[in-house]
Length: 390
Ligand code: 3PG
Image (cartoon, rainbow, N blue to C red; front, side):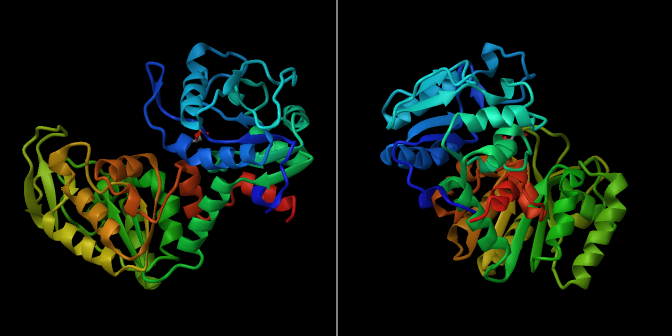
């Protein structure tokens, strides 16, 4: 892949695709992680004297039906503040009828308002390409989408390159999965096995240990014949969970099971929390976290790991009474010498809550893209960059 850092951008019109799809409430950005991650790329292009056009999507608006709720205006405001210079938001930009001088930066309004964006339309892709001398794909978080702004444009741009953020994400993931320091531990948790099935299947052939948590762990507990009471679990995937356990065993990967859990009679912040052995979960119990013995055992595994890949909290950490397991793992990840990589919305919320951001080796801006990479899938935007050569 040609990297943006390999190119001379001076005086060039540079179109940079970022993933500035951030949560917005009442017109204000509520989490800036993706904006912060994109800044170094933008600063670098500006410092080189490029005329910078930033392109991003926000949410999933209906193409051709743009409303103010779909506007990147709050993002333009935050970008302006963080860059310390005005970032003009350009509303009608497809015609190219706007100006941007070298050393100047504009943000192009939500690219998902353009007809044909979602289906990777060639005519639209060519219009994007015509806007610039160089197209930079930096939106790792959207690299799993084959859309006009992430994929099609790469084919038609005069020059196409991977941006620093995209390349850093790919480098970190390759370090964790392709050339990991062993033991390689993956922590995969979350409410449903069904959403992580492919991931679990692909990881068992790569990792030395796999810790499962949340509803996923409950389905695994059911698979080994433990009672799960009223816990969230997927009865129709119990056989699949059993197969994953057998596969892991055959490949020498260890999937440790919880020995104790924190249960409650209801899914609520103030529900009374009780620690129980996994053998003693009653018919009315809901498992909402791993227990202290399990948390300690898992933290020990983290401390001995060479590499840790983390996706998903192991308990309902939004409720403090059920967050101790996730906190113990987060602290172990922070303390361990392992190279760690964390990704996914809930995981990043846990990283923030326990204040360990500075102690994680790499924090991915990707949700779906992070998962698809871990599943071993080729990300269409990355494949398109690869096919443009080095
Ligand atoms: C994300 O938040 O995962 C990315 O921005 C991609 O968004 P999408 O799922 O709407 O394509």
